[in-house]
Length: 228
Image (cartoon, rainbow, N blue to C red; front, top):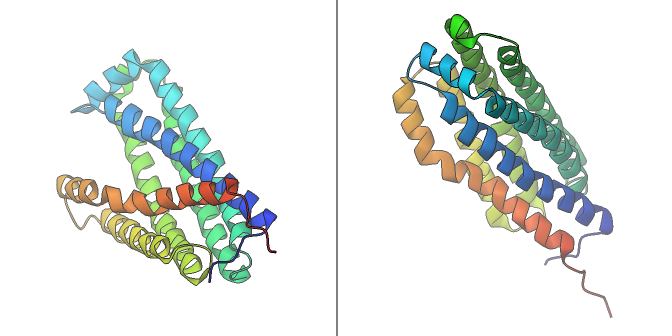
């Protein structure tokens, strides 16, 4: 049986859904485009790219700030949305995402530090060190992010409103995130092999949360049925 959501749940879900879409766009720009565009084959090439595209690099940092803000909004909004399902689990799930966001802030700080280097080509090795720290810190945080998605999966499966399929997709995405970044943190695989696996699993890792976002927006704007 599917029950109509109350106004608070619909509003919280709508805010979370819109924030997730904004976050996905910002991530596609900051990591998918800026980060991949500026990374060179060696430290000097990377430093040269940064020197020649400082405006783009700063725009990428701005995108990361948008991601941080929307992460916080999503954590709090989904906590409200799932509160009626299981208050303790919804709070714990939100707390895990907020802790992940702290790691993301620490990771982005490494990028901010690079922006203060006036002559990137003279400090190529330092820049690569900062970029490696960014990847390492963010990767550790993504282990927590995976656990957060597993929590969302549990709440979605328990909900009478959320389609069960979304819950199982969130379970899958959370499992993939957690396992992938535990492997990365422990250097079980070489970088090239890990990147190949990450490319294959990228779609299922993103699919669960993105479909949840679309569903939340749909339910948020859809009018509730009147009970006669």
